Length: 87
Image 1 (tube, rainbow, N blue to C red):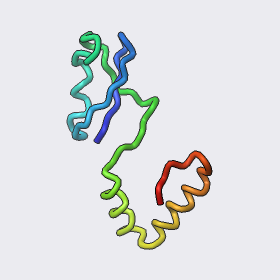
Image 2 (image 1 turned 90 degrees about the vertical axis):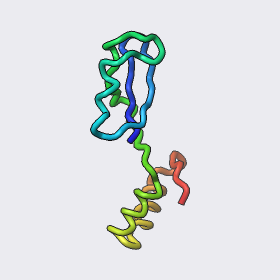
Image 3 (image 1 turned 90 degrees about the horizontal axis):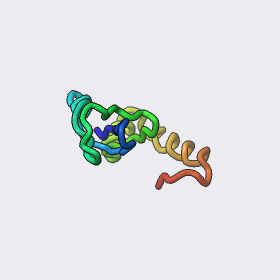
Image 4 (image 1 turned 135 degrees about the vertical axis):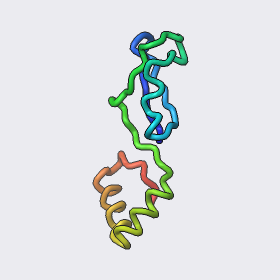
């Protein structure tokens, strides 16, 4: 899973692909930009969900059946011109 972190010293924002059990590891480590230790924290402000989209869609399709496509089309339509979905 991709986690986003920010350095409170230099405001560097960076992402790391970690297992859930390791998500706290970068906290307390050195910032990759300024090397200040102890200033890295998890950043929740710009959370974006980055998943293996194929796996996510397959699981959802198994659970919802044909309704999954309808749900995606509804989301795409309600987002209007802001939608970046490819259906």
